Image (tube, rainbow, N blue to C red; front, side, top):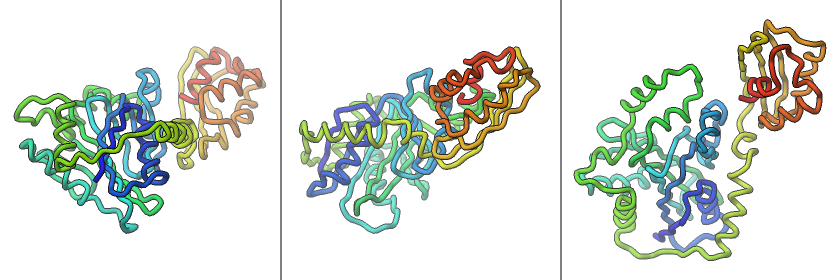
Length: 326
C-alpha cells in the first residue's frame, strides 16, 4: 500500500485527489490517504443538499458544503477530525466495508480505545458513534472513505446539519452528545490531532515508508478536477433530486408563503399565498421564478430585472429574496 500526503485542508482539493488517483493516475498498489479539512458539511451523492444542511448558518460561519461521490448520509467535519481513504484498483461490484474498517479499528484498539463496527457503516465506542463510512465504485476501482471524530466541535456540527430553524439548540446538542463521541474523550493518555494522525498512518501502513510525492503536474490536474467536479454550485446543489419546498415569512406587510417545485437546481413551478397587500404585478413573480436557478443571486437578479422587488406592500426586495431562496 502507498501513502499519499495531500498537503491540503481544502475539501474540494482532497476529494479531487481521490478522484484523480482513482481514474486518472492509477498506481501499482492500493492507495491510503489520511486528511482533514476546514469546517465542512459533506452530503451524500443521492441527497438533497438543501434538506440536509442549515445553509444560512453554513454561509454565516464560512462552512464549506460539498457533495461526495459516495452515498450515505450527511456529516460534519473540521480541523478537529480526520478523514481516511482507501483506493483499490480491483474488486467486485458489491459494497463491502469490513475489510477497510478493520485496520482502523485495530489502530484504535492499539490505543486502548474499545472501537467496534456497528454492522452497517458506523464505528462506535460504547454504542456512541465516532465514525461514518461510505464507499463507491468507479472505473473498476473501489474507493472507501470514512470520518473520525477526534476533537470535533459538536455544537457547530448540530447547527450546520439541522435545517429546522425552530429547533432548540441546547436540546439538539444534548441529543447528539448522547449518540456521538470524540475519540479524544477515550484516550488513556492525552494526544493532539497530529500525534493521532502519525499513530494511525504508522499502524495502518504497518511501518511501511512507501509514499508518493505529488508532482506539479498532479497538483495542476487535481485543482482542475476540484473546480469541475466538486467546488461549484451545480455539483453541490444542482445535482439534488427533484423536491418541493414551502417557505413562510412574516413581515411588516403580512404573511408570505411560497411553494416551489425544484428539479436539478432549477425552479419549475412557484405558487404564492398569504395575507399581504400587493400591486397587480405580484402575479408575475411566479412566472419570473419559473426557470430560474434556485440560488439567492439568481433570484435577486430575476426580481430586479423584472421590476418586482417592491410588488408586495411592506416587504422589501431583500426580504423577498430571503423567503424565496433562504
